[in-house]
Length: 231
Picture 1 (cartoon, rainbow, N blue to C red):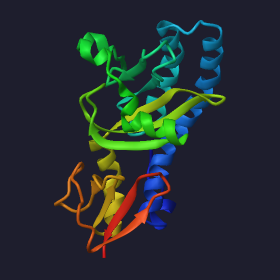
Picture 2: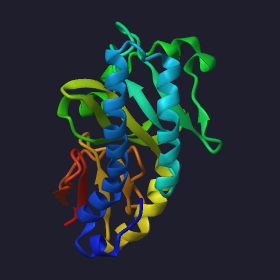
Picture 3: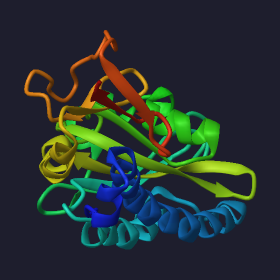
């Protein structure tokens, strides 16, 4: 992701939209490439966990080279019925070494987590659109403080799962704050009014802005994100 000078001139909401749209565009390409192939394999009964990982790995690793700052993690999270009743699967790579995540090797309980209610999975499934979730501690994968950008994967009208990337909050702040400071006291918040990034020293990522008195508010085109500016 990069900061576009033209977007900066159009204001902080346009800056945010451009920044996250570049990540969503990367995932949209992955979603399109993956959907038809997975649908074909599923119809032939050839979609094993191993085959799924083989298909996703080169696509996930490409995410790291197509984003800057590089995503911390990327991959595909299957719908719970793709591999059998209530049987989820993560094809996921993360960290500086781009290592494959194996949930069972971390703790047995993680392998059986029902992630279908998590925002980054639920919202794309329900809306059919890409989504930016967080900030949150990613207890499922990295234990890092992240934003998760996700996009649904479809085969026709059949929901197969989501492709997603994790961005470290520190990296996003480092990229956004210099440009946001051009607009004075500015905070980027999610639908729950939790801060993603703020030029106000009293507000840190994850803080909740409960009192909006004294703020102007502008919705971003990216669903759920808003820019708060001191009036």
